[in-house]
Length: 276
Image (cartoon, rainbow, N blue to C red):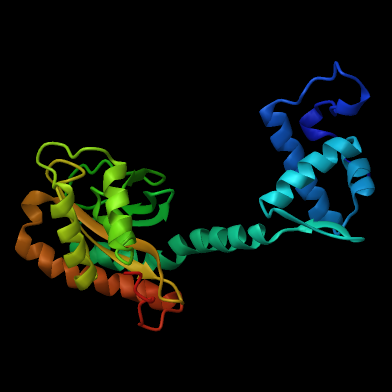
């Protein structure tokens, strides 16, 4: 069955004349996605057949396919044509992990929430930020501004710090500097690095009103089957309910819940090899 050009847009016939218009960015993106759909359905598939299925010229199809091969979205073999690339395996694994993680972690988060009455979060590292995947709002009627889907700084959040506890000191410094100069009252770089060393030794991280005024947080990493950190959980509450003594007590509770989630992910109890 011949496939329609992307989203009803006419195919660009760039090789039929100097006046042909170049496709827009979104048009090119849709064509690339259509091309991958065809390869998924029919691959391995050669260039002539691929162009015919898409309703595009060979030159346009070749240019799109070449770009996708460079990004490992497609692979190309002589006499066989194009097939799906190894990058999709990586993305599929990450997508499955992220989609499964909230469901798997939820019972542990709910138990923690029931016991502590504070706000509980689950998050992962995404593009040097902490991405919040789940939130159970505490019962103390304290407003914490975090939302599912938020991307928060690593430097100022307990969740963010817990996500990078295994990183090198050089990486910590990069993440600290990413946020620019510290605001008034925030730790300077050397103080923050010293805190991170201590957090890494304990396996928990704190937010001492760094991200949100009068809000404190205790966080711990979640590990995958290979021991690497794949997520983190945190318990957040108003500073009046989170003095130093309680935060130290909560450290064990939060770390225990994180370890339970890790075991459900196949973790054997051994951390990944140190990067330092």
